[in-house]
Image 1: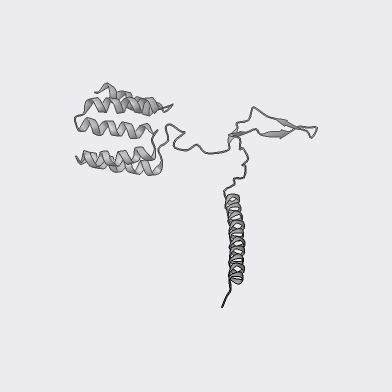
Image 2: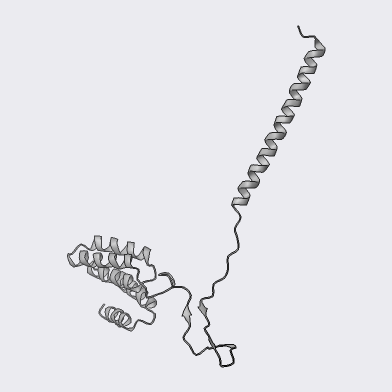
Length: 171
């Protein structure tokens, strides 16, 4: 049998064991938190210039900057930054939409054009095609708004600008 003194001693040992376990759990938690935070750190990246200046050697062997040469782009602009660019996927959707529109299914045509718009939101070709479908549906006001949007996005594509202006004049 355990007397009172030995039961207190056992209780004291249980309390010490609990403190040791709690300390170990705390240490393990801190280590795991530290490891997970290290995984979230981001290394700084180098800045890549949009254009690179070319250099040509001179007669004395020194290198001299040649600004007369055409600069080369360090990247290709995306569909979102290039206003007249229509991505291949969006182009395919516009072609399908024109097929549906030609067969009289303006609802399906509009659905394909809305998908193309999500892919290339700044492509004026999509807005012009949407305007044509809205005109086919008899919604002249919406067709004019979409054509004006296309005209605002045309940029320096003269053929597309002319086609859009002719569409607006025909409304």
